[in-house]
View (cartoon, rainbow, N blue to C red):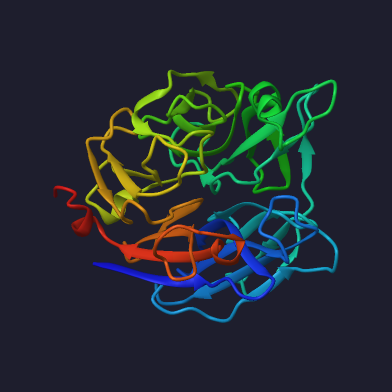
Length: 354
């Protein structure tokens, strides 16, 4: 199975960016992203949070819903997560965090107590992958989000590459009380941000992040205590990264849907140049230590930008990514740059051995 469709199509004044996709407790698929108004740029003067919902594993979708929209205000996307203990879907976003207890039908304010690390500006999940719920060890049930933090005594300019390389650090956020209280891990991997993470079967947390350099590598870290503290690993020599890096997506395929196998999926633009193209899904059978299998989902010369992945309750893999309005070619101007596509595929299409 391999099927591709537009999910959020760019239109007059509306440019879509920063995807996130999660599976609600009843199996509904919830897809979120930013709707940048009048400009596709990061510093646009107005930005909304939008959502679409599918109740058939991503085959068909409901209407676009605005979760945050106010004239002349910027509400940027953060991470989403589903907590099986409460049935809540929680969304970190600008304008006030939100949660839903009815599978995305209605949303309420979510106001946790957040304990930040002294010397930082606080953590942000903007551009990072979704949160995960730990399944193993003494921290089973803990929610962990990948995040970025800024460490600086003289301000920070996100448009400055030297500032990104010097003042950006990766971090994580975690909660042991279903999101009521959130703690921050140590900060690590200077010059990185916009990360994704996964739990290994031995309980370790594998952290994989964008780096604001031109060395063509993804940077990694490992936690042995459920995300309270991370130790820096070596850059991944198997996953190619575009210059200055790009948001990527990672998801563990549920063991109960694959006979207990250890299957981790990672998607990014598989190019070491400057152009975000050639989207590829990599497969690991050892928690991200090696990536022996990969398959392209877009061709060379086709734009593949920020992405997010989830696995539906029926085993369908859902890959949401930023592309052009017709899902072909490269953007030649801001008028054709910012749509969201969705690819549905399965393990057989990836040629994962049984």
